[in-house]
Length: 424
Figure 1 (tube, rainbow, N blue to C red):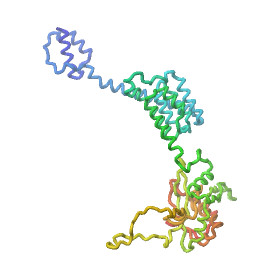
Figure 2 (figure 1 turned 60 degrees about the vertical axis):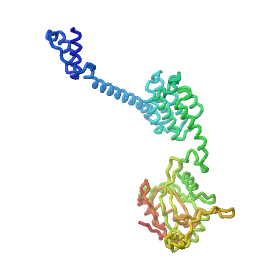
Figure 3 (figure 1 turned 135 degrees about the vertical axis):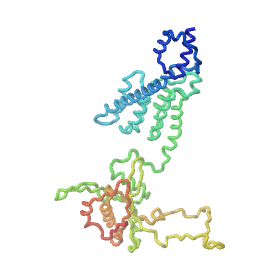
Figure 4 (figure 1 turned 135 degrees about the horizontal axis):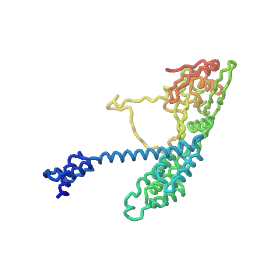
């Protein structure tokens, strides 16, 4: 009878969400008033007194998990920071990986370490090294994540580890790194034959060889570090003319004046073909020539800027667009799309574009008017018509703001042609 009464009172206490503590319940059972009390109708007997404190326990567990993950991430970040105090190279990156692998045989926290390693790879300059990716894959424990029965094969066995490996392969795909046979053997040894990382590897090996040599004008790998060689390569790709001649008008150097001031002269590289020279010779000197730019050109992950010397399209080459509603019954323009025949002329002039003829192009080390004026002065040696032609600058602001180098302007004021204007 006492046990039944204690059970009923416990149900009432649980309905009130733990208003009494456990020690109060023990004192209540020992007292005589508890034995003589009446039975109280119970609202709910399915609840427990633990519900009053379960929310606090869950919050404490979540807080403890967050603190542990933060501490593990901080420790992993410290591994890379301690090994790269002086410099960040491939050797220091591999040293950090060796420290983690030797710290624990079971490789506890290997997923967090791999994510941190993938994030740190661009800082160490190893984001395109296949050997480093294979070494990161070697951090996974071997033959632990391979499914052993049909039910494990149906489900995504160890999904967190498989997602981490897929993320590693996606980063390789992003940087254009093709896996090798060692990558395949590591994935098979870690996750098995029908896992998601192995399927991702198979898709990469199917598509990468198809797109590897699809570009008819491939960019050399690696790109030249010298800005002059990079400018030559860029101008040759833009011109697309084998007869075009690349001229180095100025090499980057520094000059110290008598007053002690140091002036830096940037490099000036230009390109012009014989056809462009003939077009410039036949240009009417009464009409101005425009120097436009900078225009953006991407070579892989490298961005360079170039300038164009061009003229407006002449009136005789301008095609008048006839409005079809000008004459409703007898239209003056017929838009008929006919197929080309065998005797049709497929030739076209790359220098005669809709915007007007292009006379020359250049790349400079400093985006200012004084440097561009030096290029025009250099063009006057092979194109004497520029002495009598007005050159108008149409310069736009690039991500690198146009520099106003007053020293260069003063130094080159005497060498600039007198027919220079700037369009606002």
